Amino acid sequence: MRPILAALLLVTALRAQVASRHLKVAPGADIPITIIQGRRPGPTLALVAGIHGYEYTPILALQRVRANLSPEALSGTVILVHVANLPSFLKRTIYYGPDGALSERIAHVLTAEVIEKADYLIDLHCGDGNESLRPYSYWMRTGWPSASRTSSSTTSS
Image (cartoon, rainbow, N blue to C red; front, side, top):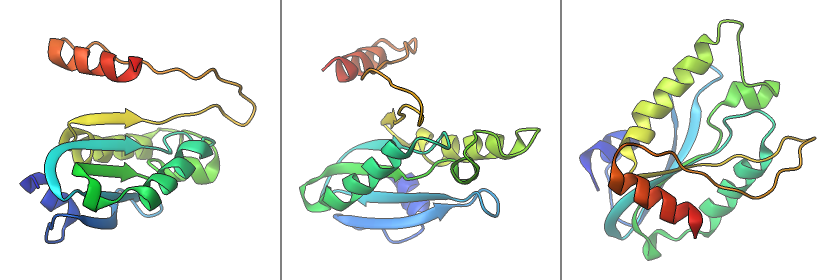
């Protein structure tokens, strides 16, 4: 395990371990995460759900992933961000306050504590209660050819 992930866990890092905790943002806005450390070393994948308040499907999907992903069979680490924006989820809106300050703090903590520590990131979304979306995926061209190739091949499969 990379030392940075050990700091994220705030526990002794052992192979084939599952640990859950909250990333501290503000009262009522802490971010529930689970880190699944595989038996063998490998890349880190972050799966993020719950950015928007009415997107239940990705939140439920990550609960299933946590229940069915065995650290014994895993190479690398999976970081599950169960509900990235808890105030948004509870209030069914993306913004918590009129100035957006809490959303900005949530974005900062997610970036510093999850995204910057991941080799790969999948940000899960779905249609709102009244939306009907076609299945799709997209990737961003980053300016780094190897990252763009990996993103493109992952989403095109």
